[in-house]
Each structure stands twice: as structure tokens, then as C-alpha cells.
Length: 166
Image (cartoon, rainbow, N blue to C red; front, side):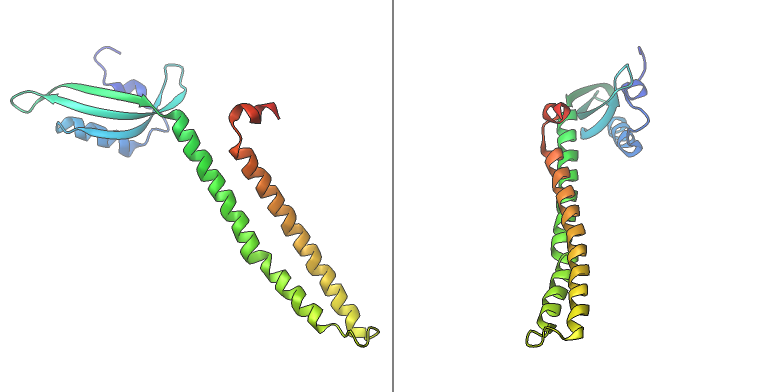
């Protein structure tokens, strides 16, 4: 590693090339930069760092050294991903609740209003009851989807050690 730039052995296949370019360009022009970057350990395991990089320039403006303080933020990034996944599941739950489930409920209310309560033997009542059964089955499917999404949200919200016990 002697004589190599850190990015030559720290960066890997999923390191963002734009981030690499930003760091290199900042160092090249002697500007401080602070960014999140995906690095790799010697064993090839990825880890996230917050890199705070300050080039040290001489009187002529030439970069002589680089001071780099790197803070491991892998756990923070995992937590951010967990929040994003949970948010996505919550948005799906909200959509099912507010849009998809609302249609059969509104239809049920309309169909119930059409039932001939005075003459229960009216042949149209049979069709209406069959439609009510169809709508109820649709709602049951949606409620199962909601339950599945809620279970996914619950699993995402559990600490890793609790999740591994299940």
C-alpha cells in the first residue's frame, strides 16, 4: 500500500464514482471536502465512512499532505435504510387503506341502500347479496395485505438481535 492513494485500496465495486471524483478533485485543487463514502476492508467487506478531508498546501499552493478523518457510519446507514424501508411499507399501508379499501366500502354502502327491505323476496336482492359477498371477499384480501405489510413494518422496526431470535 506504500505509495498508493487510499482510494486505490479502500474503494470497491459499489463505491460511487461521483464521490470518488469529488474527493479526488477536492484534493487536487486543495479544497476541504466532507462526504459519505462506501469503503472496503482488506477482507472485502463494505463499510460506510464520513470522510472529512483537508489538503495541506505549501506556500505555492501545492498539496503536500492530506489530513483525512474518517468516522465509521455503517450502523447509521443501516438505520437510514431501515427507516426508508419502513416508510415505504407505511406508504403502501396508507395507499391500501385510503384508496383500494375505500372503493369496495363505498360500493357496499351503495348496494346495501339498493336492497328491497320491504319485499325481501325481490329477485334483485339475490344479485345484490352476491355482489356484497364479492366485495367482502375483495376487502378480506386487502385486509390480509394490510396485515402482511404491518408484519413487515414490525420486523423492520425490531433490533437485529431480536429479529435473529425469530
